[in-house]
Image 1 (cartoon, one colour):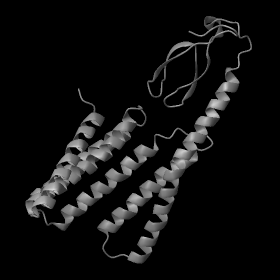
Image 2 (cartoon, one colour):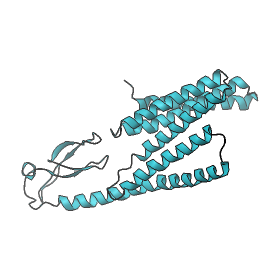
Image 3 (tube, one colour):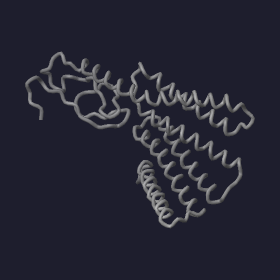
Image 4 (cartoon, rainbow, N blue to C red):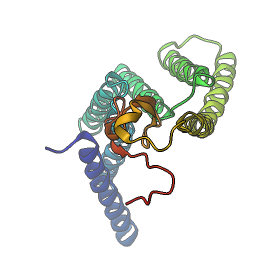
Length: 248
């Protein structure tokens, strides 16, 4: 059974190929009527929906916040279906397109949060992740208000959007950096804790030792041997050897 990530990848590839073929056809024949435009818009819509679904599906693979990627994939599917219906049914109703834009904003915000949720932050930096989620949600609400509320001070509103967008951009750049810093600090702490007091002891005598997951960088204690990370499901093995003993 294909996973949502694999389906999104295939959809993205097909949509990109179709878009490229339509562009080549238009350039060679010099014709680009409404039918070709609809096909191109369909391909672009599927491409955008596939990219948002990929962002959400990648978080689902880590088994973290499963409700969030599920909601993102559902929103992506609904947005694509609504846009395709509007394109091919030639809908001109303003309310319909406001609903479509609202779904698109919600989809983009959810995908953005899913991407940033990949960052594994230490307790020192976790506040940055919370701030990023709040900033993204606030930006989405401001855009939704701009879509639905007609009588408003547009200058003030755009200033608020600009300020919030800058905050989102800064935090989006900052979180990967903090992720690296957290990983470096975690490795340093693990090395200090891993220094055995009696190096000659066998793995069975060691009991539980501090372990760092190589995939999600979660820290926990486990006996040497075959280990499965409780957070991401990564399978790995840890062996401890005595000084002077050759490793296999």
